[in-house]
Image (cartoon, rainbow, N blue to C red; front, side, top):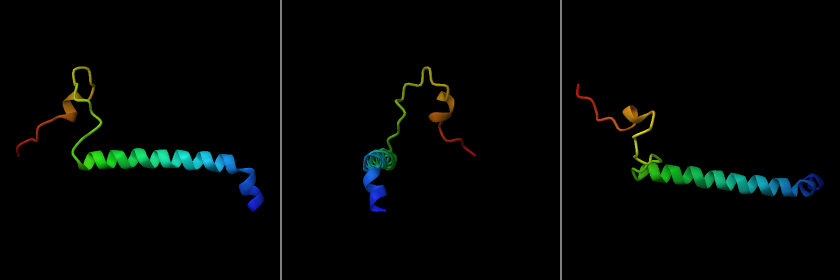
Length: 60
């Protein structure tokens, strides 16, 4: 087993770096969402979702 780890040490290291980057991105998105921020830039002039993204709540 230790031979396999030694033979694949570079691959394991790259995997750990990529996993840390994905974790940091997801953590940042969750933190921004809790603070009320989003990834939307707010420029809806040419956005295909302009009518859905910033709708006002409908009265019932």
